[in-house]
Image (cartoon, rainbow, N blue to C red; front, side, top):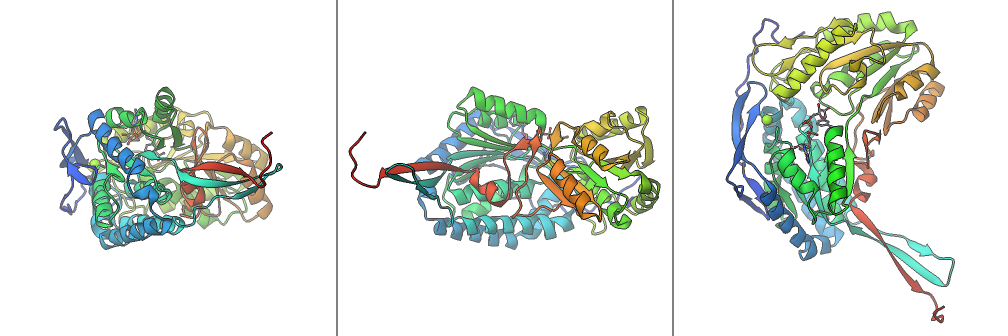
Length: 501
Ligand code: NAI
Ligand code: MG
């Protein structure tokens, strides 16, 4: 099941040169005002990779000042869309030229698979910049026919200074998903990466400068959420905050926005998504989708399909096939080509996942496979599968954010729809069936932002992504991902020189 089941993991010491560790403010790499730094660690070994400048309120103030000035007086929002497009295209090319280095940074900093980084995360980030670059010169309002002797048109204008607070599970893609549309819209911004993965965003910042994006447009301030993050969310000169992370912090972001300048907020907060497998499903495909849906990116993914509902007619056969298949799932060094699952991000998460596994056992779920740490040192955990899971068990209710799959049995379509919806979350759902009517009924009945039929994790630049209920609101990606960075302004004027009423 694992690369090394004998308690040892052989790690490749593929540490790329760490070129950037300071804050990036107004186009320059600078130390924090306090001079403080924090350590970022390699989750493969728990060793320190680098000391990174730690931003606090004063540094956020400086970055916001730079972004505000770049927005109020600088060229970026005043450029034509075509001018912005050109620089964003250049940035995408620079990302492509540095694929290996960027992928390696997230592998040592966040334990992400290096080969996936090279073929999925980094090229995907470059494509995201191209996608929104292509939209930058197509931002138009409408002409409005009015019921009176007036006419009006709308202008779409950038919302202003944006704070992006991003998590550690997809550092590169989150950066692109948030920064690219905001740039296309003409906004200026401050990015606050997660303290667990501070490195790659600084490399991107360096590339924005090489691409010719003016100083102050993109600023990167690393630091802790409770200090740098909260200074950003409560800042009076920030017009919008886009946040991806936990529900707990999502609430704090809203609260800070409400208590400061009522800035706009969009939130992407994770979930407890169902994958629903019907009796008529193609079984091998269903097994594969359930595995990928739970273990991809070591299950550090908001859209993980962590509640797998299996219809009673195929339940036993499904479990047999799943048990067989998970045996060949490779946990190990994320630099190894064969590895499918690297280490968890940090000790806190690692311990949290192990305690959820204990909780599952205590509550009476049956452990089909896994359940233990892998190796000595590093944050490796076996892919873990529980069967006989009941809806009210904690492992079926709370987001674990780790390689722990819960399998639940169901009888009828109505029953499974109601059980799948019985959650405070609503991010995505998977439906595996060969019956079109079943697929259509479930798709329209589940309250979630994305439905994947006979597939899973179908993220694409073209498709808006975000939640219902406590999974948050607002959408990343697609044209909705752009429109959230735009204000609509209405301009009205009389058609004739009619007397004022
Ligand atoms: P978190 O929500 O604390 O961190 C996410 C980001 O928010 C980081 O950049 C962090 O520095 C920042 N942050 C933290 N406190 C803040 C505050 N008071 N004001 C402003 N920004 C703040 O998530 P954490 O602790 O890293 O992970 C805990 C759980 O959150 C995970 O187990 C998982 O359930 C969930 N999570 C969900 C993610 C998603 O993709 N939706 C991503 C990361 C975590
Ligand atoms: Mg790290």
